[in-house]
Length: 317
Ligand SMILES: Cc1cc2nc3c(=O)[nH]c(=O)nc-3n(C[C@H](O)[C@H](O)[C@H](O)COP(=O)(O)O)c2cc1C
Image (cartoon, rainbow, N blue to C red):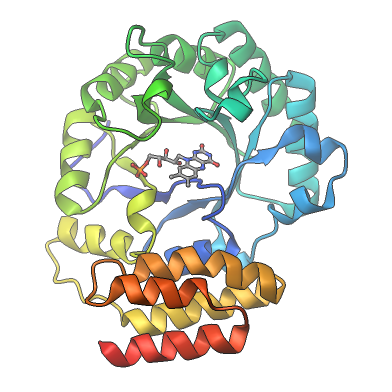
């Protein structure tokens, strides 16, 4: 039975282009209990695509780490999951059934699976039998607000052996626009049974919104996405609030420098600089002079320039 008075388990949401190994390490070190990687094409894995496999690499200090696959064919999904487990040994495999982007849905992948409970069952069953780690599914509420599909989808996944399910409380047609519907996540929880592990996701930005989402949905596992960008200490902040403890924000300059060091350790310089730009811009969001800083970040080309910029920003605090 969920106990929402207890500090919830906090998951870093999968975010393509954001939740790479460096960011996951930072979030784990600042309070995330679980981290989920960027979505990975099961098909590309079965083709042996090297760039795709790079998305799956992680450090031991990130554990427990969940790798997420997307696709629409049960055989390919099972094969992709097996490749991930054999080569990277993640602590769990998640199946993407929520991505609303047309590039994905036009192939019958992501949220396009939501109204196909038989296919969901087939995919989950195949992936379960291919791997030895827990298998989860990440859903949206449905494709459009005219129909709640998440209950049938979640029941199909559960009956095929999914170990837990995450529901992002939006419909695919909303993309990321408000509102989130915690009451509908609650309906999914009720249908699955109180003891079945369900993760609630959508618009958690602080302790208050976390408490509200946990309270309405009855979920003691919450997933946080966008609010962690530029604020990876949000996990520790929420935990401290639930525990009634005072939260001390880590030094932002040191957090940025650590993040950058980890990024340069795991990616070529040019790629790391490019990807760190959005993170640095997010760290300084809302600060005096943020627009000028963002402009400077975007003109940064090398590792040295990036660290000099971080150093300059750190002196501003
Ligand atoms: C830039 C970006 C990339 C995302 N990539 C993925 C992804 O790869 N897999 C997935 O299941 N969800 C993905 N999502 C959705 C998030 O995991 C999450 O469900 C959504 O952002 C809602 O949570 P939030 O309100 O806490 O951000 C992505 C969201 C964003 C903003």
